[in-house]
Length: 214
Image (cartoon, rainbow, N blue to C red; front, top):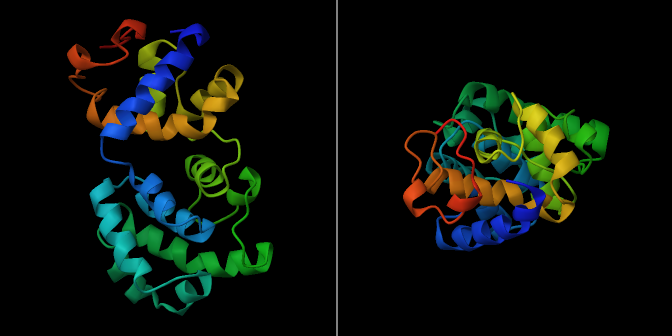
């Protein structure tokens, strides 16, 4: 797959995206543009199935509306609300530490720059890029396991880690696709281009894919 193909591939993935269940962070974006809620939902979604994340987010946002509300919850209350998301104990501690960091370093507001977002508890590059793209609509490429695996399966890039994939895509992928590639590829990876036994026989971009490792 080359950049001659990528515009058409992204259009086909957009059509597929509109037909399937929306990934949880995109669902949060549809419900609110609040960067704080997008940040919290993104932290909770890491290494967690969308259905579990959705339930935890709904429970939590029924109790809190802003960063100060989060500060008012005890650690025990917070843990009960987000359980059983992946790494729930660590995420409880990260969320409890979040208000202090936001107030002391960023005036209580969620920052939009990657380097600033990385200073927040529980935020890695994937989360930082996703929050920047989803909450602020600013150029960012969020690379999760789906994006890393599938872009290499396509033969669009050849990388060994999500960080290498992010850097390679920043150099190669036209910027007009940066904000949507994660949403489209995650939906594609969850429904068609699965890690094992991908549904190549019904794949809309079959002719563009080198199927490396399949």
